[in-house]
Amino acid sequence: YATIKNILSSGLPIALQDGFIQVSFLIITIIANSRGLIFATGVGITEKIISFLFLVPSAFLSALPALVAQNIGAQKPRRAQKMLYYGLMITISYGFICAIICQIIPQQMIGLFTHDIDVIHAGSLYLMSYGWDCLFAGIHFCFSGYFCGCNQPTVSFIHNTISILFVRIPGAYLASIWFPDTLYPMGWAAPLGSLLSAMICVGY
Image (cartoon, rainbow, N blue to C red; front, side, top):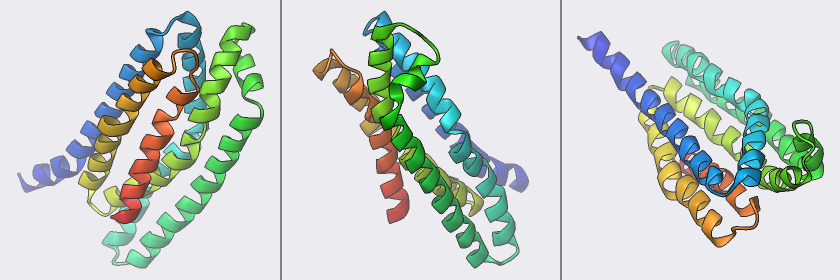
């Protein structure tokens, strides 16, 4: 019973967090689809590009919990903190480079998937703003991995839930209403949500 309780106390917040994140992406996709075929296609292509760019931050989100937990269990908290530090340095550097590339050649990146001028224009604007999520998400990914390794997954669940409920979903919805002719403001919903998560993690 005690073992099952410990597993659930660590695994349930992580499972709920991942579920909420997927639901939030689903809702944002619904909002994008309601804006017409051109915008929906631009958003869909951008999501695929971002998923590829997120391979590095996601890898640290997966790796840090196990590595941190091993060192915490071995009574080496300083080494665990160094892992967080180096993870942040790598993901921040990588995320900044990705974000800059998304500002420089967004049309060429979207153009890999389509030759439709309208889709390229709409998708490139969305990619230019959404691309900054590679930087901010990398920060809270590393912290989330560190917190889970320290057996504090509830912290990760809380900051992700706050981000989703107060920034990502309402931000995407309001941007679609206030700026019906462009995807650029809507693309900022995810990076600003990740920025809020990163600030909560750093503060904690």
